[in-house]
Structures are given as C-alpha cells and as structure tokens.
Image 1 (cartoon, helix red, strand yellow):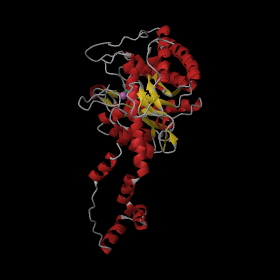
Image 2 (cartoon, protein in one colour):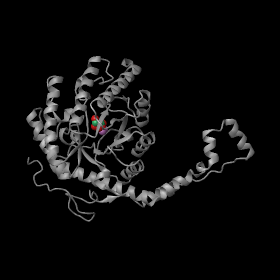
Image 3 (cartoon, protein in one colour):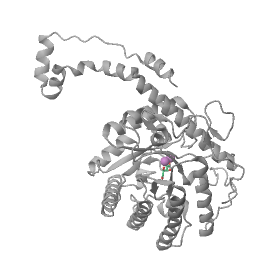
Image 4 (cartoon, helix red, strand yellow):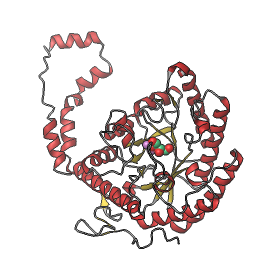
Length: 434
Ligand code: XLS
Ligand code: NI
Ligand code: NI
C-alpha cells in the first residue's frame, strides 16, 4: 500500500440523502436497471493518462501537480501502478484504459520501449489478478513524442510509418496479454496543418493500409475485441482526418473495414465537431459501428477539448438514452477521459472528480431507462412515421419508379398536410425524467 490516498475511505453507495462527500448518491452497482445491474450497464473505466500521467500544465505554465511517481524510471512507473490500482479499488471501478507512454518509462529506442512495456504490463497482470480490475482498452500514444510531429501512419516519412506500425503491434500484444476488451486508435496527429505541404490523397491511403494491417494482425493473434477508431475534428492538427463518426464510416467503407472496426465516441470531440454527443452515438448505432464512449465535457465557451468531468445530467441522459436504444454497452464502456483542473491539487480531488462523474452517469442512465420504460417518447416517434408502416408506402419505397409515383399522386390527388413536430412537448416529457 502507498500512502497517497491516506485517510480517504472506500467509496460506497449511501443514497441521495447522504451528506458525505466520499459516497455515491446515485451509482449503486447492484441496482437493477432494465433487468441488468447498473455496473454492467455503465462499465466504468479510469483513463490512466489524465489521472496519473498528466502534470497539470497548460500553454502558459507547466506542472502544478506534485505526484511521488513523476519521473521517467521503471521504479517510479511501478509506484504509479500501485497508486492507480489503489484508486480503482477505492472507487470500485471495474476497468481502466492506458496508452503505452502513460505506463512505461521512455526507452532509448523501440526495443527498450517494448521491453519496458512488457515489464510494466506483467506487473499490471499480477495486480489485475489480485484486484479483479480489468482492461477496457489499450492504445498507443503516437502523438506526444516529436517523431510523430507530422503524423504516424500518415507521415511523409516511411520510417515513421514503420515505427508506428511496430508500436501499434506491441500495444495490441500488451492489450491482448491483459485480456483487454477493445483496442483503440485515436488519430493523434493524423491530419494536417497546411495543404501547402500535404498530399492529402496519399496520406488517406497510408491511414487505410495501416488500419488494414492492424485488423489483420489482431485477427492473426486471436484478439477478440473490436478495434475502435476515436473520431475528433481538430486538435492537435488543424484538420484531423477522423473528423466525426460519419467521416470515419466513409473511410471504413472505402477500405472494406466497416464490419471490422467500430468507434469510440467522446463527448468533447462530438461538441468540437459541431454535433451533440447523442447525435454521434445515434449515428454510429444507425451505421452499426457503435463501440464505446469516452465520457467528459468541454467548456462551451472555450472551443477547445478541455476534458472536464461530466456534470450535466440532462446531457448525459440523452447519451445513455441512445446507448440503451442501441442495445447498451457490450464490449464497450464509459471511460472517464477527463482530467482535473490544474488547480485541483489534492489526492481527494482526483477521487471526488470520479465520484461526481460516476454519480452523474448513474443519474443519466436511470433517467434514460425511465424514459424508455415509460415509452411515451418512442410511441410519439413511431406515430410520426406510422404512414410508412402501410404496405403502399413500403411498396413505393422498394419498387415504384418516379413515373409510377407521379401517376399515383395524380390519381389519388395526394395533397400532404403538415403535422406538428411537437419538439417543445417532447422536451417537456424529457424534463419530467431528469
Ligand atoms: C484525445 C483523445 C485521447 C484518446 C486516446 O483527445 O481523447 O485521449 O482517448 O488516445
Ligand atoms: Ni479527447
Ligand atoms: Ni478520448
């Protein structure tokens, strides 16, 4: 045991009336929601990078956090792992997620990096065995080191492509060893700053070939979980190639990967793309590529990926409403890709940020489930499309030509009458639940 979280009790469910800071008011893992345990619906995960690797810097100033494990040695990486697993246990979080660079010290070359990753993931394996914590997904950090400055798979330099492919291979290996349930590829620096130095068509081909190789490799080693692309429209590059869910779908179709690869959708990235979180989830569900979510929140004024913890129940409710309609999280989970504000220095801040986020998600899930069980919204939606259930309408859609349709419009003197979309009435229904 480290003493990092000394004095912080195990977080338990105490119900909405609890006045303790260190308690869940809504997240009750054992509670049954729509026939399933709440923890199985939400499948919470901690993001290693924000919670344990991020020093609290911003563009105007460096490190604000003092963490006893900061530094780039194996001994410190092991202490970091001890603290991380202590936090998972305190919160009762079933899963975690990591990048290679979050967990291992940086070596002098690829071989040393891989050896370091193997050493630390062996240690993870022991800890996972002891505590029961599981890996939701692993991923490779192909964006922090300056070798990835101009992209990884999409780099103009084939050596960077090679280094990146080799790195992703080792990260899929590590994820597989730890029985990770998914493998994530967020584009990082796959994008561009200026067309003046960029061959867009070539870079897109490189990205496609890279992903095909990753899929092939995962199959060859028997990795069961889906590969997930995480869309994001900008930041760090001006134009990220994986802009949003629809863009990623077009890309997957192009390379014949739409049945192989799914998406990991992040709240803040959806907002940056000019969408809502629920829009991105519903789009992925409609296209059959919904995988997992990164839960966080952006500041709505700053226009940047601020990665705050969620604290808005109605927003979270609409996200889980779409998730429940899509059949719920299966291999995916709710990963808190969220970080403290840089003034939130204390170990207690780290715990309580997650407590708050987990409670908000639990509230959102319960409200979404209640809305679905009530059924009014879905009934209204169905009524709106009821005309399409009639056989004539289906026949028109499937077989009729424009000439047939024109003839019928004349014959039956079809003359549509607009009906109310009733948006405010529907919003009032939502407001009854959250
Ligand atoms: C960055 C991304 C990143 C991915 C994992 O904006 O959200 O944290 O989730 O590489
Ligand atoms: Ni992000
Ligand atoms: Ni993310």
